[in-house]
Image (cartoon, rainbow, N blue to C red; front, side):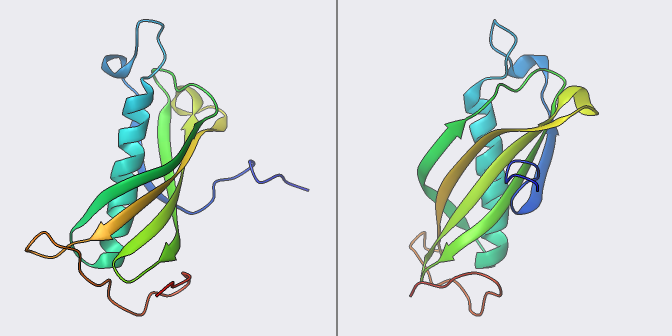
Length: 137
């Protein structure tokens, strides 16, 4: 029986290579860089759902499990957990492919909240229906 940490939850949203410029003096990738990659992935997913512009309004939880190293491919997976009238919650998991081709390990996960906004910069309604996602009106 496989554990929940054997494979990612959600769909692949982004992949990027961790480079030396993204590392701290100890050689590990900065947590802020990983967080920004997750925010980008969540923004792509939220924008697809909202069919327009979205903004991050909260990072409700963030857990760093293992370090990311220079040369790892960071793969970020997203799953929309809840959609309200103007906002949505997205679960993110970041998995590292060690040395670009090696073992895959979950390194970080978090819960992000996004709001759909209109051209005026104010919250707007998320289009309906959205298949496969719990709606909380």
